Length: 324
Image 1 (tube, helix red, strand yellow):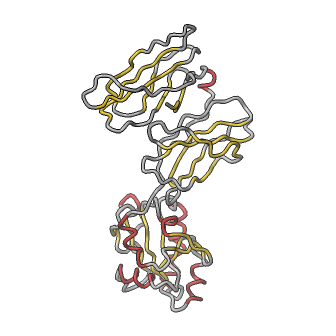
Image 2 (cartoon, rainbow, N blue to C red):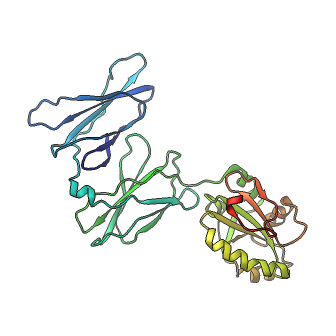
Image 3 (cartoon, rainbow, N blue to C red):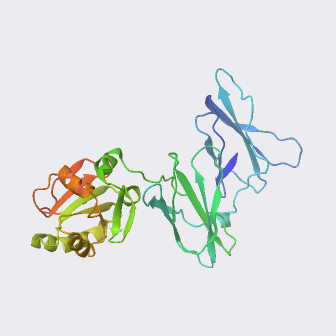
């Protein structure tokens, strides 16, 4: 059994899920000076393997135990418990905790975790846990100097929770963050971009990244067909750059060059802050065929969650995400 969170009046605990359990019975006891531990039942109708006991008082410590009710049984055959007592925070500790950490998607199976700086801290201990019954907190940085970190390889569909505390001062861990999962690509987006030869996109003229890192977690993906020799394209691109800088957390643009040669592509792409399909990748022309390009500039808006086309050409209309 694991302690997930504590305040000056409540304890949140979690235990491993038991196969075949219809429900769980949860009991608790205060630490006493006698050798006998007297458990009181909190509930025998729990359907999840996590619970929060409120309205606790005192600094004596508490023990919990949980048992699975399987089949027609009325009582658990085995109890899941812990060896050391769980203690409340003091009122002062509870009030001095860091605020809840902010967690947001940061690409394929990755999240960005950030928090506010604490006065007097020389670093931050950062922990995470998988959101499944009985999973423990694991330290991923004992003394991190910054206030923002990107955590990758988060593959669990159940998601993850994060917490931190300042190093150098006597402080408790922050309130656990909201659960978060690392974003994945939708089947629709994977299907559209399956024509790429290396399953990669350029992020500048010399660097490429996996498709999933570039596009996962984006609400909208825009296919931009343009060329340096096209005056209307050169007029529209700066406006598109200004708009993109304001929405790039939820939008990614993929440049599909209609230039006549690679040097033209590289020269034009050097001015752009978004991704591109390599000029030599046959998938570039296949993607232009997919959206049936007959003229440029062309800006096709795709739903990042489904791959469905939302706007056939957004060049001639206001770029209004709220209407997409």
